[in-house]
Amino acid sequence: LGVFGGGLGGMGGTGTFACRLISSGSLGIELGLMALGVGPGANVAVCAYDYPGNFRAIELLGARPVLVDAALDSYSISPDSLRDIESDQVDVVIASHLYGVPAQVAEIDAICRDKGWNWVEDACQTPLMAIDGRFAGSHGDLGVLSFGGSKPLTAGNGGAILTRNPLLVSKLNARLDRPSDATPVSSLQAAALLPQLDRIAECNRRRADTVRRIVDEVPWIVESLHGICPAPSATCYKLAFLSPKRDHIVDSLIRAGLPVGAGFRSMHRSSKRRCNKIGELNRSAQLGDQVCLLDHRALLAQGDSQDRLIECLRRFS
Ligand SMILES: *Cc1c(COP(=O)(O)O)cnc(C)c1O
Image (cartoon, rainbow, N blue to C red; front, side, top):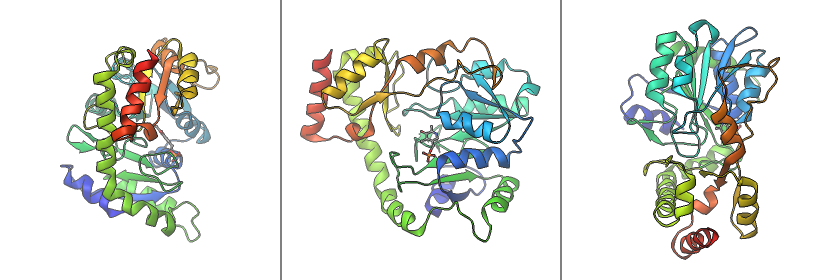
């Protein structure tokens, strides 16, 4: 899968990317934190609304999650809240790109440099999405991709970890190059993955096309996007929209036959014995209560089935 490394270098990054294949995105986050020296006593900033496995990865390493609120104009960690944290209160930051809307990588990177923090970029949902002219996963000190069962690139299970920092490469190699290592992607999985690389750009384009139509033709969804809309070039794994009547909407759309579900549970209520909290975390609480997700299977619809999807969503208002 050197394609990824080559592609990333070709997108204007400096230095050569190392790409190691691993058994899952979740393991990638854990290994990435470990390579950055996270262990007992370390504090890791993570959005209170995020893939719950990221919170768990911090805990599994004996470190302490520092919950940061989500930004108002994305579903990701808020740069403004990060900026308010004293540099000695955090060691490493995790930032995820969710639902085709990128985290604010330039701001996050600048803040981390300023405070002396490293950051892990969770690009599990957004393989090959261009952000500021470079692929998702190439902005952080380490980037993580997932090839899990439901992800845009899938091998059933699997993932990759990317970095261009030679010190981190050697730390990862020390972890991964062991005689009977149990965590790689198998040859069989790689064989399933390789042909998908030729199709991912086309699938991303199709999903973006469906999202564009929804935005143009389904007013109630546009309203519930609250101004957050995936870019035309986004890798839309799922389309998120917000509703105070989330459970009702999800039930009704499922009954109408659409693949719709709720977003992540927010961690804002976690006990202070388990984590530190920065501010009120109101936005994360709102996302945890209100995010509805239209699945990527529906976003891939084309032609007649895309028309039927739009019709079904329009009728629903
Ligand atoms: C799916 C996902 C992961 C974990 O990937 P797995 O390969 O399923 O372990 C991590 N972060 C985000 C944002 C995800 O969506």
